[in-house]
Length: 267
Image (cartoon, rainbow, N blue to C red; front, side):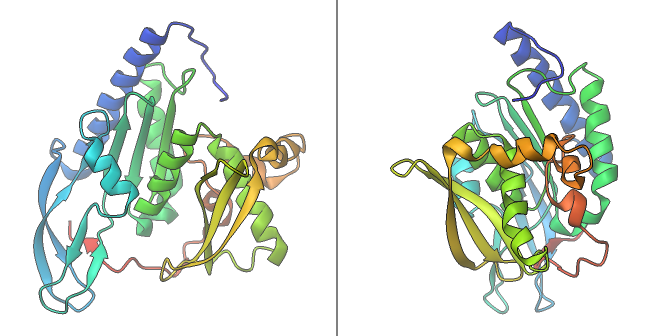
């Protein structure tokens, strides 16, 4: 992993990490004008127009609550079932994920906030700099939009991969159609095929999240496309590999993205 500040002492890195987590949580207070709680009551609006009052998770400390981490990975976290129309759906909301063992922090915003990524990336970057921690050795701090993006970052971290390299792999897929399919299809890293020593990449419909196909890329070569990008100073994809928001959305997102998540929190 690329690191701006090399720190050899693992205990020192862990202290920096915990300080970073505390300061990231302070952003939450600015967002909701209150301190974060693990569970909080919210009012959500179902697409049918029915309002529900539900308890939703605000943050996960994976070391303390591994069951919640598993709920996140299995898409069981923060879901509602409407007692009016029977719809079962995930709720998109502000969320913090922390895994001390993996030295991984992620700040997750709703998908519908994606067009505001420059503001949120600067905010998170400034917060990390306050503890002298743009990114220390072995630590990963990320900004994501939507639970699916968060799940992917957790899988990537668990697999010990470079998420920037994975994003460039996605660009290689989209380039086959001159990026015309970007607004219709989402590509996600879904795991490692240990037998074939390959990354599993799933292509899903952006509107329904239904998987359409899966393709593989050799683990041994997965970082090669990123190396080519970084060696080309004129390549616009270089921006994807920088900062705390590591995503193709940096380059491709438009304010008229046109996708609204089915269930959102009423702030």
